[in-house]
Length: 198
Image 1 (cartoon, rainbow, N blue to C red):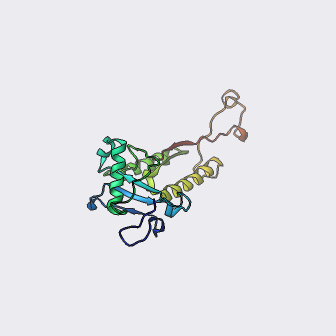
Image 2 (cartoon, helix red, strand yellow):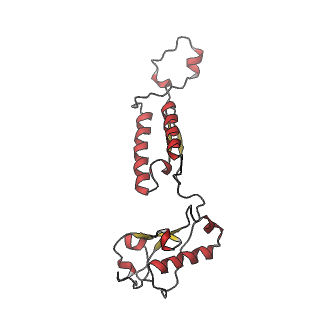
Image 3 (tube, rainbow, N blue to C red):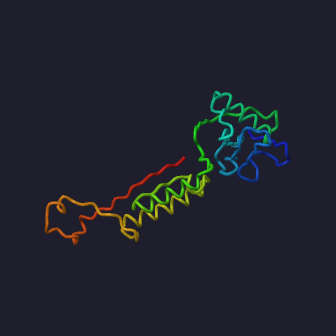
């Protein structure tokens, strides 16, 4: 339910912003919370708020060993530490999802992997390797990268790409010595995709 916050911000529904992040140094297990009903009015009944919480991460993999009730309890505890009064009403849980490998970790050697991907793409016309491990995990970064890659694919398929792909041979080309390259209908674009969205 909508509650008065202990920090002087007023009611939860009137929060100015879109969410909060919790540094590990704060001792809160929940990584962050999106204030969904503040961001998108009408997402919750008038007397309620919708909070989307993220918990776990590469530094807290043990969270995956907890039961659903235990995970929900940890999230509720974190919300009460950061956002809610301790005596706030219990939450109504709409759902939860466990992603064992949700966000790519840019660890040592990641730049070398990206360089190898770029080299492979340059050597194989029509190959695009896409995913949030290339340009960032934030949603706007993923959308921007996706649009840019889609433009490249469209240009390639239309034959506008300067790096022309090889054309597929037809049975006519193989069996007719008089066949020429002037028949453009036998020219086939062959794009290859490797797409992953985490």
